[in-house]
Length: 273
Image (cartoon, rainbow, N blue to C red; front, side, top):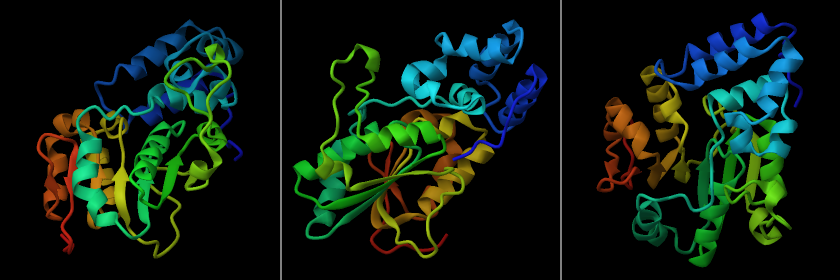
């Protein structure tokens, strides 16, 4: 995918950052941190060198994946970091999936939507979990960063560990990988075909909390509309605690939170809010 945004001067970069920041959390420390790096740069090549020396986006994407990004994509990776690791579900999400959703999936193919998917670790985690339970499935996973999608499609596991220190890096088995469709796509405008079936599980973690409350609520409403009757929406406690108003569009659809877990179960028969 070609990147149409080309920065010719440092003021061009600043304008892009400020434009992007208009929809991000006003208290985000990532914006001023990146602007400080920009202020320290002499020119565009120096700015890119400073980021390549070990910025936030590079640490989470990995040096090799980060190197494949355009400068605009590197800037975006610092504003919304592609943080992900295998099996990082630490709030009982997989237990909720096992108890509440797996019994409903017996005898049919489950459909999962994961956005954003970063390097694919959460998609790989969900796939391994369902395979262990004998559930057939298909996963649609999207991220706006082409370099992340390229890495995810390779099946390479990041382990949340610098890949340059892994010999050899692990890879997902082809039988598992073929069940996951990784595509480039904006979380706010997913390139899903007209009339696409809803999903049994919609998963969106480490993302919504980056935005303004208004932007966050619009995304949750959009994600909730993709959940099938009897399905579940997986978020994260950080965004739910940060934005209490996110509960409103979910309860309007009669979705019920599973205890204190960041999981909402939808009724077997959905009603339009």
